[in-house]
Image (cartoon, rainbow, N blue to C red):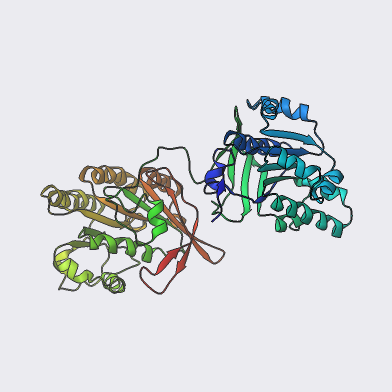
Length: 473
């Protein structure tokens, strides 16, 4: 694996998993005003601070203008030139290409004179304009790339966005990386500056469009999947979900006493993800309470858990779990004493059952140190049976009870069938939101809220043939 070179742009190195691989040539493309030159200078300035001298070659601007502009970011380029750590050179594209092709030409002299390791060329667009013939243009870009490689330089090559057509530009294929700077409409008349790494050989890239700002030190990038929040170290007592990527997004896995909201759509399959989590909790000898919805029966759950080598019926008979049945469905006499049947109770009796029977019995069990509990309920089944007002009334009180007794909660909500106000309440009261949806024939999963404040990338959910029967990619 190549050594990673820090860019000097805060946040960008995180998106690049540490930096640009040493020796890579990276295209920086964007419209005027997006900060391409600033990124180039920050990249070179970072090198000067760690003993990696650099060259800034410009075809248009005079060095004096660049000196003046960079003083706004407290970067004194003239001072760095005096220390032989940097050179700002104005050349024509014709001269640069000619000298690069000569083994002992001006370009190699410049590189050797300061032991140059980083270079910014502003801009590749003028080289493309200089070579009117497409074949000659490609030949020139190849020659430029080969010269940079031969001199072992890590390089940024600036490209004006106006030169990029609907088809992928030739330089995107030739060079190792492409970073796109752009403006997007936001908040009516306001335009947000964004950065996206479209390509980078040799390092893992955190995909997506990331916002950046100009601050006193230059460009500052805020990665889109890491919002401002406190960082919490991974919890060693967390229980795995069965998937490493999901564990990573959840600070190590499922943590005691948190409320996990599964926000799903009408198409996405979430049962295997949830059952995988429940299986791992059962392996830790956790007790459970399950409020059944109309989409699954007790016998169906028994069959599903058998696929995970879990005998849920035996678990129930050993007094380690209870079901609550909301519908008039047959109950096997063998397990009837472990099933609460509330199919025909009114709203007042339902509420009394939840707090005076279920919560109270779990609290007594926890207080007597007879085990840890988690419970699962589908909020849509309560909405359908009891109505919106009832859910809003009971849910705030229920969350308070969950926090008091320290039970881990898994709340399933079909966002397609839930009004906005209720969904907002569920989101607000949850500690963690695991969202899964189907788009363009693929299912995705994303942790959109977590204790650490980290929002995960949208993962693809792949169906596999072995336990846990899904994999995140």
